[in-house]
Length: 59
Image 1 (cartoon, rainbow, N blue to C red):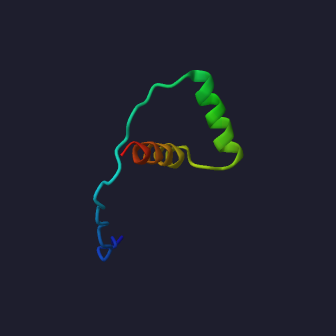
Image 2 (tube, one colour):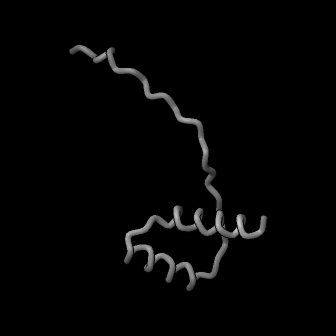
C-alpha cells in the first residue's frame, strides 16, 4: 500500500479572534439563542458586531 506524499501541509492562518467566556442572564441567553436560531444568524457574529458598535459609540 502506498501513501500519498504529494499532499501539502496546510498553512496555519494567523489567529485574529479570541475565545472568551461571558456571564449573562439565563433567560436572556435562551431568548437570544432562540432568536438567532429562528433567523439563522451566528451568535458569535452578532455579539462581535454589538461589541464593535458599543466601542465605536464610546470613542
